[in-house]
Image 1 (tube, rainbow, N blue to C red):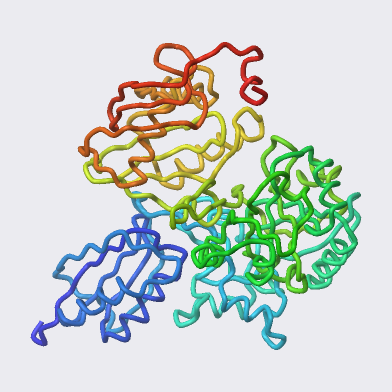
Image 2: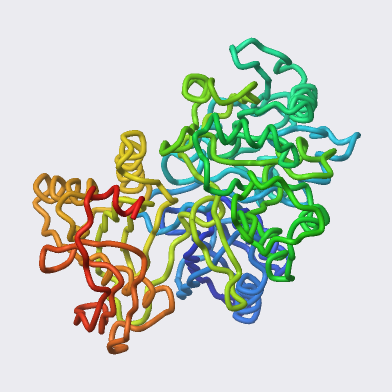
Length: 566
C-alpha cells in the first residue's frame, strides 16, 4: 500500500485459550493503531493484522512481554501476507476448528480482583461462591472438548443473565468470553444438607448455607464439601476429637491430612514459611505446600502423625474463601473419598459413598466433568518440586528437550500406582492430572475415561504405544488391548529406566546428551530378567541402560503385601 503498511498473519502457540488472550490482543492492537482480527483455532490463536512494520513489531514485542496472567506463549510465528484485513477496525472473531495443537488450561485459584468483588457489599457478586473471570476459575474440571467455548463445558446448563452476557460480549471487560462466567441470578447455587440428605439451608441464600456449614464445623462436625475438582472432607483442625473421628471414619490412620488456612498469617503460627513457599502458596496453581512444622501453636497429633512437616493450602475457590473468612485457625481439607478410593465428584455418588463419613454435605449444581485432585508441592534445594501434579498444573503441556523430532506421536500408559499417562505430540508432552492407583476399580474406570477424553481433547492418534514391562499391570493390559485393536506397535519399558528418562526430560537433557548415572530408589519394578528389581544403579540415556548395581534381592512371603508390611 502507498502508506507503507503491510499485512501479517501471526500464529500464537501455547496455553492461549480460556485465559483472556483475544481481548488482550484486541486492546494491544487498538493501542498500537493496528487494524485486523483475532480468533481462536485448534492450534492456538490466529491474528491477521495490518499496519506499519514498526507498529507490528512493537505489538508483537508487547504481546510477548505482557501476556494475560494464566497464558503461556510457546511460540509466535509471523508471516507476511498479501491480503489485507477487510475491516478498518480490529475485531474479535469466533473460534474456528482444525487439527488440535493448543492446550487445555489448568484450573486456577480465585484472583485478587474476584476476591475483592466477593467482599464488596455493593458489588452484584457480593458473597457469590462461583465468581470467576478470565484470570481465574475452573478450566480442566469443566471442559468436555475443545475449542474451549461455553457450549463445550458443564456451564452450558446455565444460560447467562443480561448483565453477565453483556460482560461476556464486551472485549474491554475482564470477563470477555469467560466461559464459566456467572452470578447469583443465573449461575450455580449452593445448599447444605444433613447426613440423611435433608436440606438444612437452601439454594435461595448461598451465604446462609456457607455460614451454617461454618457453624457446624465450629461445633465439631465433619462436612463433605463439593469443590472445583472433587469433594473434600473437612473439620476443625484444632479439634482433636473431630480429627480423630475423621480418621476413624475414613480408615486413614497414618497418612497426614491436608490443611487449609485463610491466609499466610494463620499458616505461620503452625509452619516455618519461606519466601518461596509463600509465593508457591499464593500462586494461581495454589497447591498443597509441605513445610517445616513450627512449635508456636501445635496442632493435634492426629493431623499429621509422626511428621515433622505439615501440608497447607490457601482458599482457591470463592466458596473456600467465603467459608474460611471468619476462621482464625485451619481446617482439615482432605480428599472426599473412602480409603483406597478416588475422590468423589458427583453429589449422588458422594451421598452414597461419603454418608457414613460426613455429618453434612455442602453441595452445588455445577457439574464436575473431570476429577482433579489437589496438587502437592515442596520447596527443595531452593526450587519448587511437584510431588503430585494435578489441579493448577495439569494438563499444561511440557516441552521436550532438544533433539526429539516433532513428528513423534506416542501414548505411554503409565504404571499401576499413582498412575497418570502421557501423550507425546508435536515436540511436547501432555501429562494429565494424577489419577490414582489402578488396583481400585473406580480409579481404573476414571483412567479409561481420561484416556478417551485426552484423545478427543488433543485429537491424538498415536503411531505407537508404550507400556511398563510388568505383564500384570492394568495399564500394560490396556496397552496390549489398544495395540491389538488399533494395529499399533507396543514398546515395553523397564520401570526404573522410565524413571531416569523422565528425570532427564524434566531437566532438559538433550536426546544426544549422552549417558548418566541414574539412581532409582522409588520401590520395586519388573526387571528385564523376569525378577523384581528395586534400588537400581543404571548407566542410562533415553535409549538404553546398563545395570551397574542394585540392592541384593531377598525372598519375602506375602507377595505385594510384603511391600506394604516388610
